[in-house]
Figure (cartoon, helix red, strand yellow):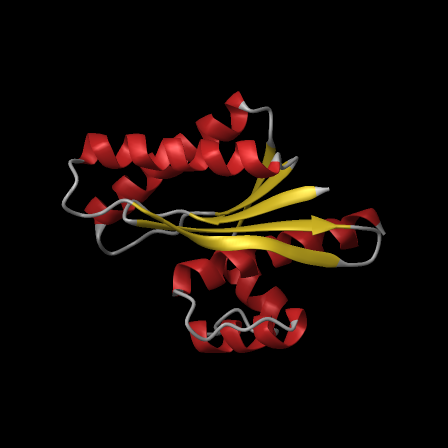
Length: 160
């Protein structure tokens, strides 16, 4: 099965694409979808939707794991991220891709053992668990990898 991990944002969205067999997973691709802050909001939306669709067309995932939004002190940012998450869910739905929302604390606890872990701890554990170089990767990309890996582990546990 091919599955995605998505850390949704309106300027940067991290993504990770994995394939899995019975007992292992392999990272196929990861990166960032940039919607430059100098673009109008409408152009950001279109770029985001277009890039998501390209990713889906290339890898044809069957499942996506998305970081669930948490309440933010900056309401304007939270609203914009929620709007982009709505676009993400629309694109996934149009392509008949099932998705699951995963709470950020669940990601932290699953990856590091602590729901209060910071980004450095998550990057270190992702590097160790997946034998993956995290140096030079943007936080949003690492978060997407962690979200996908968490989804995989939780799904694997649910099926056992």
